[in-house]
Amino acid sequence: MATIRPMWRVPGIILRERRHPPGRRRIPEPMVMDDPESVAQFHTGGATNPGMRAVYDLCARAIDALVPAGGRLLDLGVGSGRALSAVLRRRPDVRATAVDLAPNMLATARTLFDGEGVGDRVELVQADITALPAELAGADWAAVSCMWTLHQLPDFDVLRGALGQIAAVRRRSGAAVWISDFQRLRDPAACPQMLVCVDPDSPAVLREDAIASEAAAFTSAELTEELAAAGLPDLRFGHSTPLPYLQAYWAYGPAGKHGPPNRGSELRGQARREAALLRWGFTAKPF
Image 1: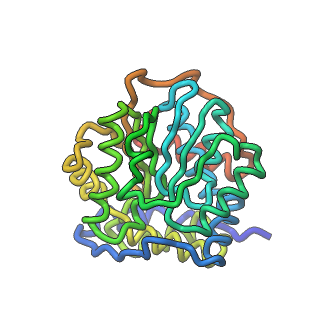
Image 2 (image 1 turned 120 degrees about the horizontal axis):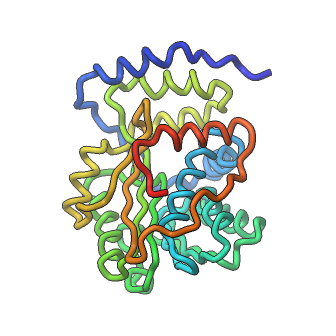
């Protein structure tokens, strides 16, 4: 039986977050998640956890609007492949090259893509997203994406390296850009308390990973400043509401917004409802 969600606590969590003073310290995570058990838990959660599936759906809809017909997508930090898989299932005309440092993540992603019948449209590359191989950095891309990855970078120097790569790809190719990630909240208690309210049945390992990722995330002020310094000052910005724990930045390519809009959703049940709420509450998005 599903646990009753104590949603009556949510307004208090939001109010305390808004009143909390800024200046919360960032707690970095390891840059590479490659422990087999952690990879397996994360990958399973991406298929079963409604909140994770809602975020993947948001990213897929965004990239759908950014990539022109037949476009090539460079995905930085592909992880176990769930986010990119949502894109490729939505857009059968898109081909992608996906980069990650973690061998177990890449192996899991390859199994996923092949099992879903999209493997022939994905090239997987083991590489550092802060120093892309020349054959990737110099290629022609319709779009570059980085989903749920930046919070794993250990410090601002490494963040600058990753953003510099994205900026260089955009300058060279005129590529559209989609960057999405957690945002570190002001109140360190906000994320743990909200997860108890909205997702009480989530496995402990997934909840702990989400809490650690939020604590490791960059704030919107920090990320906006670093994007500008990297040569990406003109990206559009949106964040989740009522709690701004997710943030996104994007730019269209030369062809502008891709159509047609409003493709249907493959999600069902709670995942579909959470995806709709996330879209409705996001302050701005490209679709």
